[in-house]
Length: 246
Length: 169
Image (tube, rainbow over all chains, first blue to last red; front, side, top):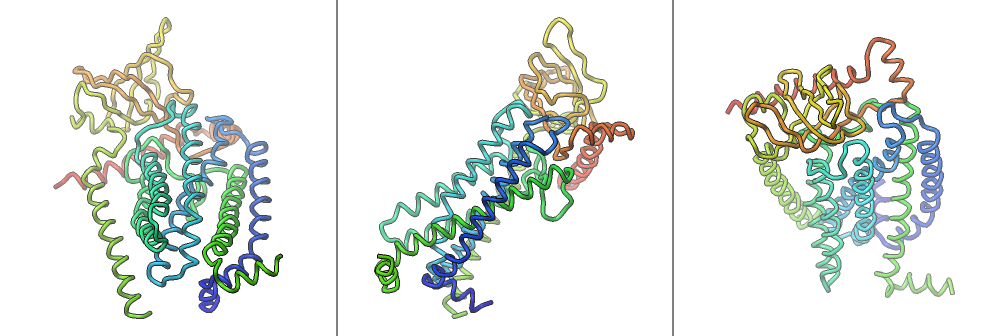
C-alpha cells in the first residue's frame, strides 16, 4: 500500500497508472449520470408538496457535494505538497480548482432557480447560502493566487495555504443548517443516516452523486496527466514518450 | 518522517487550528446575527427590535389563516409551539404557504405586538415524498403537515433548551 502511494508521487508512475484507471471512471461517470438523470427527471415520482420542481435536487445535491469534496481534496493535496514536497499533489490541486468553482456555481445557481418557486426568493443571506458563496470566492482566490506569482513554487505554496485555511469553511457549510436558523432545510442525503425520502426518489440521487464523483475523478486524472506533461516537458521520459508517439 | 517535515507539518496544522479558533470565536460572537430569523419565543421575550425590519420564523399555526375575500390581505399566526406571533400581510403568498408549513416573514414589529410583513417566504423540510405516500400517511391519521410540525416541534424544543443553556451567563 505504502509502496503504491510512493509510486503515485512520481509523475512518471502517476502518468502510467492514471492511463489505466481513467477510462473506467469515464465509463462509470457517463453510465451513472445518464441513468441517474433519466430516472430522476422522468421516472421518479413528483414530490407531494413541490411537484416537479423538486427534481432540481438531482443536480443541486451532487453539485453541492462535489463543491465541498473538491475543496477538501485540494486542501489535502496542498498539505501533502507542503509537508512532503510531492509535486503530483500540487498538480492535482491546481487542476481541481476550476472544476470545484464550477460545481459551487452550479449548486448556487440551481439553488436560486429552485428557491424562486419554493421559498419565494432566489437569494437570502442565510448561513448556508452565504457560506457557500464564500466557498466560491475561496475557489476564485485559489485560482487567482496561482496566476499571481511568477515563480511556480511560490504560487503553489500560497494556493496550498489558502486551501488548507479555507477548509475551515467546509464544516461551517455542512453544519450551518443545524447551528443557526436558516431558510435552507437540513440535509436530505447523508452517509450516516437513513435518507428522508423513499427509495424510488433516493436511488436516482445516489446514482447522480456517484456519477458526479466518477466524473470528478476522471477529469482530474485527465487534467493532471496533461499538467504532468507540461511541467515535466524537459524530462527525459517525457521527451522519449513524445518521440515514441511521432 | 524527517524532523524538517515534522516541523512543517506542525506549522501547517498550527496555522490551520489557529485560524479555526479565530473563525469559531467570531461566529460564536456573531451567532445572534447569523440566525436568519427570530422565533416567536424570542419576540415575546422582547429580544427583537420594534419598528425596524426583522425576520421572524416558525410554523403557520393550524386554523389561524384568515383571508380577506376582497383583497390580497391575509392574517395568520406564526408559532413555535410555545409562543405565537400575529402577522398581517398584503400580497402574493408562495405556493408552499399553508397551515402547518414553515415560513419566514420579513417585516416590522408594530407597537401592538403584531408583525406587518413585507415578504413571506416558505420553508420546506427535507422530507420529500410522492403524493401517494403523503396520501397514505393522511389516511393513517397523520397529515404530512403534522408530520412536519412534529419534527419541527422536537427540533424547536431542543433548540430552546440549547438557547436556555447558552443564555445563562
